[in-house]
Length: 152
Ligand code: HEM
Ligand code: HEM
Image (cartoon, rainbow, N blue to C red):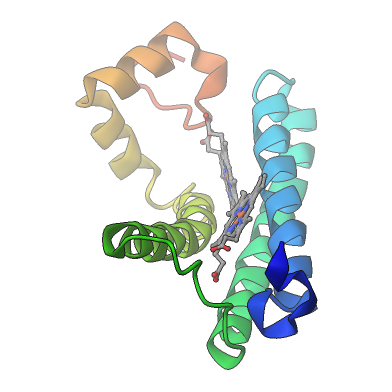
């Protein structure tokens, strides 16, 4: 590629390191939550503790990455892109940043509402057919211990 030796045409080292650190951490955190689902309660809670800690680290790293991105200029898009392709690329990148913030914030919200908001969450789940079906067919996958769907 002709642009490979021109630093302005590439993302800086900080952006690249943060991109891959966060991508790996997201993949690892997904696996942690997934694996913990089928474990006995004590082991699940221990693994979920690590899941939450890593999730908060991802949130902080994403905030750092956004600041980094605002301070450092991103390389220009390839000139051959059509206007709609360039617009789609910007929207996709913005959507990825949104998800990188929204997922850990949603997890944090879930964690914080575990005691107080549980009744509210159970009611919401019990009137949502897909959620109700998921929690009744696989009770171990739902940690809310609510009595609305299943007698426990
Ligand atoms: C959880 C996984 C991932 C997330 C959240 C993510 C997020 C992002 C974001 C937000 C950008 C935009 C950077 C910016 O301009 O500010 C980006 C760029 C990029 N990502 Fe990822 N990424 C992930 C995984 C991957 C993987 C697996 C690959 C390659 C196989 C990849 C390749 C790239 C490339 C090549 C760019 C630069 C695109 C360009 O030149 O405009 N990413 N990524
Ligand atoms: C990028 C970061 C994160 C990713 C990718 C992620 C992903 C996941 C996934 C895939 C699940 C399993 C959902 C299911 O039951 O099918 C889950 C569950 C959960 N996550 Fe996260 N999470 C993240 C961050 C966080 C954070 C920061 C917290 C709390 C501080 C958190 C708390 C929870 C809790 C409490 C559950 C269990 C929900 C339940 O079964 O009741 N997560 N997460």
